[in-house]
Structure formats: C-alpha cells, structure tokens
Length: 463
Image 1 (spheres, rainbow, N blue to C red):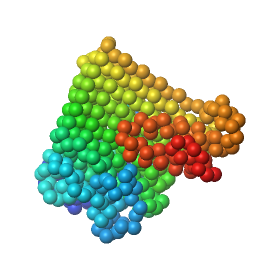
Image 2 (cartoon, rainbow, N blue to C red):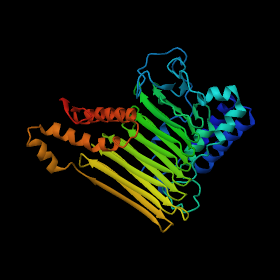
Image 3 (cartoon, rainbow, N blue to C red):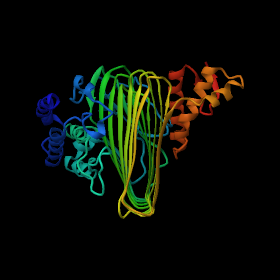
Image 4 (cartoon, helix red, strand yellow):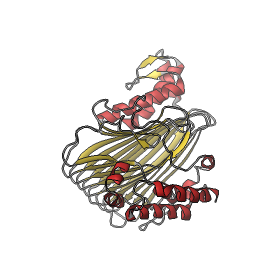
C-alpha cells in the first residue's frame, strides 16, 4: 500500500504540470492509468504471472518521472548506439526526456512521420489523445488461463503507472504501401544516479508498408534507474515490421517493458529482444494474430551473471485461421544469475490451420545459476500443428573435447560454444543490419562473461 499512497501524492502534484494537462482526452487517459494502478498495484509473486520475478527492489526507487538531469537541448557528449551509423532516422531520449540535439530524424518519405510524444501533445493534445486511443494497453496476461476471452492483465498496475505519468515517448506512423529503406532508431540513454521514466512507444504500420525499428536502452553511468515502458504496435494487412530491442542498461537498473502488437491478415511482425543489462529486466510481449495468413516471429537472447535477473514473458494469440508463429528464446546464466521464461500460445476455436512452435533453451554456467521455465499451449481448435519445448543444461562436454583436441585452449573453447549457442537466435533476425548488430552485442557480452572475445563467425580474436 505504501507505493499506492506515494503515487497518490505524486499524481496529484505532478499531473497539472504534464504536457497537455487540461485537455479532456489526455486527462482521461491519465486518470484511467492512475485508477488502473490503484486497482491492480505493483504485481507480487502471489500473482501467477509474477511468481518467479519479485519487484521488491521497486520499494527503494522513486516512481516519479525524472525531471531531467542534463541539458537536453545542448548536451551531445554521448556515444549514441546505432545499427547503421549515419543511415537511420533517430530519436534520442536522455534520462527520459527527448533530446533534439542528439536526434537525427532527417528527411522522411511522404506518408511517414516520426515524433516525440511530448512534441505531438504540445502541438495538438486532442490529436495526441486520438493517436494514443488507437493502441489499447495489454489486458491479458501470460500467467493465466485466458481461454477465448482474456480477462484483466496481471501487469495492469505497471501499465497504469505508465499511463498516469503519460508525457514522453515516440510515435512512428508508416503510410500505406510505404517501404522505408532506412531503419528507425529509438534510443534511451540513462545518465542519472537514480530516477524513473515511463515512455510510451507507438508504432503504426499501414497496409502493405515495410519498416525496421531498433530500440536501444543504454547507460552512460551506473545509476539505479527505473524504466517502465509500454509499447503499442499495429501491423496492417500485408505489412512487414521488424522490431528489435537491445537492453544494455547499468547493472543496477530496473527495466520493465510491455509490448502489445496486433497483426492483420497476411502481415508479419518480427520481434527480437536482447537483454544484457539491468539488475532486473523483464519484457512482456503479447502478439495477437487477427487476420488470416498473419505471422509472427518472437525471439530473444539474454546473458546474466552475478545476482542479476532476466525475465522473458510472452503470449501469442492465434485469433484467425491459417496463421503462423515461431518463438525461440535462449540465454546464458552464470554466477547466481536467474532467468525466467514464460511463453504461452493460444489457439482460439476459429483459428484452424494454425502452425505454432515455441522453444526455450538455457545454458547454465555455474552450480548456482537458475532458470524457471513455463512453456504453455492452450488449444481450442482441432486442425492445428503446434509444439513447444524447454531445456536447460551445461556446455556440451563432447563439443568441448572436440575443440580441445584441435588445440584450442579450454577457456577459448568455452567462449566459442557460448557464442554459437546464442548466435543461433540472432541468425533468425530477418534484417541483416539488426542481425549483425545483435551478433556484435552478443559477442561483447560473452567477452565480459568469459574474458575471451570472438567474432560473429566464432573465430578467436584475442584472450
């Protein structure tokens, strides 16, 4: 109850100063978020979907949105990550606030817009509210038997918290038939010693359009920050969206993210999440295949050590017939690190000819590493092809012996096998720029875990 009481004071104090305050649509959205937080609160392990992830660390973190600790107009002293330097449309946020100096949107094709949410609100609060209303917040949770009629989500309190302080974020719209050649990048840089941000990311891809989006979360400092991100995605008929997230925040940071995507007929939504940072990081991905022939590929990779915690939770909801889903999540756990995988595929009664597959694999590098895996299939149709599986184990001793027998030192052989294990996930990424960047980030993380650096072809570079 302490968090709820604290939020009441924060909401009453800060809401009159948020952008667009007084505009009926935005006031309603914020009030709805505040009410949802009051109703649902911060999830605890007593809630099934959060059984393996405890948010007790939030007790010591301010929930108030950061007021900005750097000069967001002028400061350019940051190394901004990019999947294709100089060749992307980029929005940058520093400590939760939009930074125009670091951003580089550049010329956009007709039919494409890329704005910070605050700019959109300040230009037209009514239009901003209309845009926000197109993207309903997640309502189902992967920890429940939701059946054909999903109920209230167990992450509702966090989504509500995001809505109560609705102010910043990014809005991307891609018009019908537009194929955007350059990737769009949305970058969040944390520099503060502490602080919270609650961005809303909205991606709307119209029929027949195609776009690649890279989302970066990085630290330029070691602060105990809290990122609470809610993303809404709409993929129109026959459209293609490739969406990758690279979470590399400080090892003291808390990162909680919720993504809800709807996919229309014959459309494709590919999403990849790489988690290598944060004291505790959780991503909830919910994909709803609403039209015949829709498809999704949901994949993720993580590397945790020390006492860090990574959680990948997903729900793929087959609503229509003739849809396809593929999910592969793999991770490496060392020290006293802990990982969670909760993945559910639902096949509704009308979703005949469904083809859905799910795989989770974890590599445990120490006796104290831990993985909690909960794969689920919930099927209400009879003409389907579905499978799931989850495995956890140590490095393959035969493969280690094979490499050692060819003169490769033990530590290097170990690093090569870890690299190959995670690279298999990155190889699934459809966009070659995202794929190359993901592999490079994986190799960098393996270097920190093992002290050995290998390239994306698993060739030794140095020890």
